[in-house]
Every structure is written in structure tokens, then in C-alpha cells.
Length: 333
Image (tube, rainbow, N blue to C red):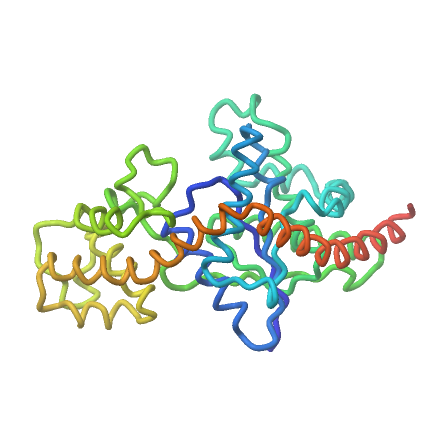
């Protein structure tokens, strides 16, 4: 069955292996499935919910776009654009914000986590971020949205807003109620230094992550120094209990090899960690190094990236603007 897929990535810079395995690799697979229509957005409006350096933000938008392209997302097959170039997102968000309820937003756990104890100082944008996310999705009549567990609640909110709008304005099926596409395997890649912490660009140690722009030598060095333990290589999945670092490294190898973790365990059960790490480094270098080199090449051609985003935004605007015009008529504008 054909799917209309929408997903976005924040342009926070310094994308890493966790972003690739947990999201971008999946985007490429979805794009290449027959009849899927894919829209991939660099969500720069979401990025400014916390303060950004303007020059750095512009560079990060281009870097994220370059990572999309270098990883295999093709502008001929998918729409690639940045949110701020399509005014319909902001316009639709206001109308949907008048449909969403305070009680719904108060239940959003991600706001509580990001705002912390001093939520009075958090921006209004951070609080209403899920309404903009709903507009992103609903304006394109997306049927499916790839989300991680941390975004699942926001997608539920999008569904609630769609259903309430349809009901309040007696417009059945005006907004689609999108379904989540949750990656079953390897959705969360953990730190190379702590298997209980998600791989993150904010970790002070660069050795905790493999950046998509790392060189071959940097990748090999980081894999070599990745935390393991004093036990032998596991012989079956049950032996992974309480061994998060080993499970994480096996997951990385499995994802990049396109095989399940059971097969990876069988492949390395009679080998030592140094042999496994050597082969893990080989496959990470094989997959990530060409992406790294292509990102760096593309970043030098800012006009090319800007043209991709402009062209994609024009395609996106045609879809989203038409939906907003219909939305305004239904509301009474």
C-alpha cells in the first residue's frame, strides 16, 4: 500500500551515527519503496524554540540538507525543503493552535524534560512546538510519520487536533489522522562511552559518538576506544542482559549490515572483542566515510544546497498553501 510520508530533522548541526541509523537510513529505505511519496523537512522553525546563533543556524540548515543528500535522499524522488521557506506552516499552526487544548499541551512530557524546573523561563515556542509539528504533518495529508518513541506523544496530539477540527467544523476527513511508523530495530543508538545514554552531540566527549563528518582514522580510533566489558563475546541474545555497551555495538554492526542482531551474535560468538571491533570499524568506515566526504563536498557548494531547498520549498508550498486556503474557508476567513 502506498504511503504519503512526512518527517523532519532539526538543524542542530554535527549529525552523528545515531541520527543516521535512527532516522536518515530509514528515510532512504522509505523513499526507495515503490509508490511511497516522501516529504523530508529541515525543521528550522522548531530549532529556534531555543536560542540559536543566526550564522550557525544557516550553516546547520545546509549541513542537515547535505547529510540528507549524501545519505541517498534524492530530490528527484522526494521533496526536500526547510520549513521557514513555506509560510503555510506558520499560518496553519496558528489556526490549529486555536483548536488544540491547553490540557493536551500540559501533558506533553518532552516540554517538561526540556524546560526543566524553571519552565517559567522557557519560550512559548517550546511549549507550543507540538502544534507546529501537527501543522507540518496535517498540511500534507501525510498518512504515515516515522517517529521515535520520544515523538510518539506529539503524533498522538496531531491526531487529536485533526479529529477535533474535523468534528468541530463538521468537515469529516478534511485532515488525515496519520499513523506512526516506529522503527522496530536499532531506533536508539547509544553512546560509545555509556550504553545507557543515547548518542548525542551535546555529550562533552567527542569519543562518545561517531559524527557523520568524521574521517576514517577518527572512526577507527573511536571504535577502538568504545567501552566494552570483561566478559566474552555473547553466544546468544539472552547473554546481552545487563551488557548495554556490547548490545549497542552489536546493534550498530547489525543495522549497517542489514541483518538481525541474532545473526551478528552468531557471526562473532567465537571471536574476541578486538576482532569484532576491527570488523565493526571496517563497516562503519565503508558506510559513513563516503557520506562524510560527500557532506564536506556539498557544503562547499552552498548555492547548490540553497537551490535544492528553494526548489523543494516551491513544491511543498503548492501542497501546503492549497490546504491552508481550504482550511481558511472552512474556518470562515
